[in-house]
Length: 229
Image (cartoon, rainbow, N blue to C red; front, side, top):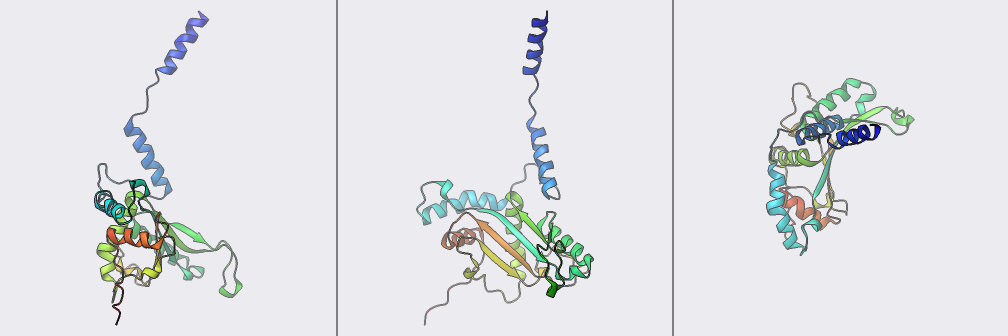
């Protein structure tokens, strides 16, 4: 009898139902939300720029650099946005306002950045909050890039293209902006003070030539080289 009960128990364990795909997707969305996502993207939502990369950018890069495999093709992996808030030393509400602005700009909850060491000349203590940062990947990364190039960049005063010298030698582009008001999502009444910010576009290019070609195909405007006299 004991053996029969043991066999029946084994069968019951083996017949345990597998988790449905819907449940797995819900768990993934909940994990993303804990990491900082404001809300999961709608089911079946298509990202225009991600489709553009697969259908047009990737084949063009393979042709330009004679790459034999799509896996060797450079791609964008993440976008990091930083806003420094020096006045947070005296007014902590300034940090809350910067966090709110970065949330509406990126669509994701930012991290509070704290000072790593104390500097007496700047009245800075270790652990003091001095800025906010957000890291975008996947669909949210492509969505931000699309909005940045299509809506925000045209609002930059006297803009003539980003300087290719902003690349770091490994195919990553670092852009410094003087004011965050170029983003239409920012409420000018709530946030009248212009804040500077730094945006880093991280790629797998490995060198600046491939990195520039990748971002240029995706729509990033660069300065045209001056004609030789």
